[in-house]
Image (cartoon, each protein chain N blue to C red):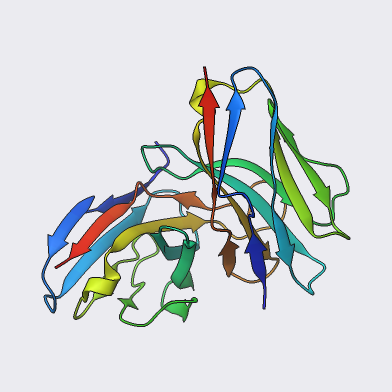
Length: 116
Length: 114
């Protein structure tokens, strides 16, 4: 089944304790992205990756890191989480290409993160 | 700066009736994509419909259709014959062709009344 998976789905942690949220897709998509969703703000792009070893900042990259060493994986790293990073996080992927469903993102199930 | 505005935080519709959700966007680009995503209580983001800006014909997917007015920068979603399963948060989104930057609106929560 074609899908984007995220782990963990729920995480409660404390300020300053490094954490990683994993994201994996099995559709051979070149493009992957991370978003955070906050009430009243919609989804905001954190980082995105155009392909292996190619990443760039979105609108709200502060406090986050990413890496893309393999095409299928795009982990989100919070080196020193703070309470303002409490949010719902989504990973998404799509293939490059015009026509068809190119540029249409497929989303993972979301990760609910609480930083105390 | 590109922005997407959904001016209706919440809407209600009677089952089997029709409802229209509004979305406007601001851009100076001429080539882009527009999307509507549905987020039910499960939180999963589900693509509802997709429109390419260069296509004048409005996209349709079964009971879902859009009214794309490029000059007015408007992209409204019409849901016909509303069903209880349509109750969800709906997000409008925009993407410039050739970039990987997506801009989402703040969402409209749709309630379907039995």
